[in-house]
Length: 269
Image 1 (cartoon, rainbow, N blue to C red):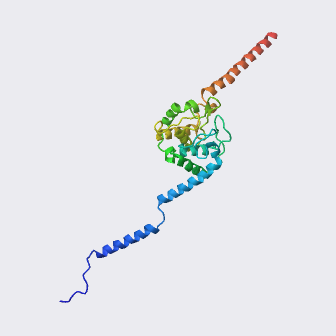
Image 2: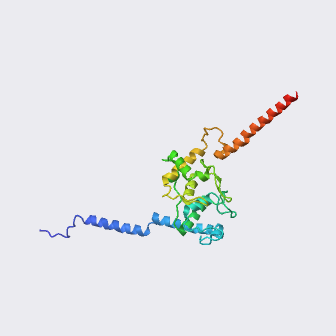
């Protein structure tokens, strides 16, 4: 019998060799492959924080302190969150031109990218409300009637029943909500800017906030019609009563003067 020159290979030997080759290739890939998405996100976030800190040092630190701890000219920003920054800077309220009873909205001086960087830096100082997504404040799935009920219960006493705004005490005021973006309305409810109380998700759920925004869009939208005719600014009984006194009573006085003049003329003749 002829002696075998080599031992017969096991049938699985080729599979084992293939697996070892793939493992070695995978190990090399792990070493030389580009950074993962999570690492890339962390790097981008770190860069945003660094750029935001630079912007903060130039435009905000003089009032809010070098580390956001607050001063006599501005409150602490530790823990206010990205949503507060996006609202205050995105509506032009910050940086403030001068202190006062209430800081009004004005022209925005930062780009959205710069606002995002400022928000990233302030968020790094302490956890707080995040900037809402479009799914949170968009009209999809909103209940307008429920939003109207919630708005009249929680907001109308300051902002008027259609969000036209109104005067408060000591030079303060509730601003008009007409033309304000849904994102900023959501952020205002989240953070409670200036004289407004905050409505966290325990007080008003995400769905509640969505409903309120949908109601405001319905009553203040470009296609909104006033079934009562002349709405007089939508300010409610104050403007309606003033109109009645000035024009209604004025008309009655004019008629009375006219009748008296005609009567006197008739007696003379």
